[in-house]
Image (cartoon, rainbow, N blue to C red; front, side, top):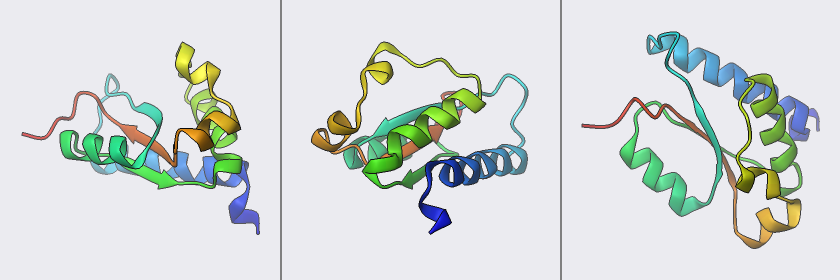
Length: 107
């Protein structure tokens, strides 16, 4: 059951981010945008950006995983992200931890 913990999920997600950045020649100024998104938002981001990573995570650990990833990458949370609770994630049908590079758009 170790794969269901927020710590494990965060470590695996960070590993995937590192690999994708290395495999696709990310430069030092290329950064990841990390978000919690719904199914519809995920689809829109995937259609707009290349080099995306989305992982569906259980709602019970989604917020904790998101916080660990943001903290590890030293990315500040927005006011909206600070206001998230496990209940608001469930009510708003947020299911995915999503990463994308704002600079890498589809043509």
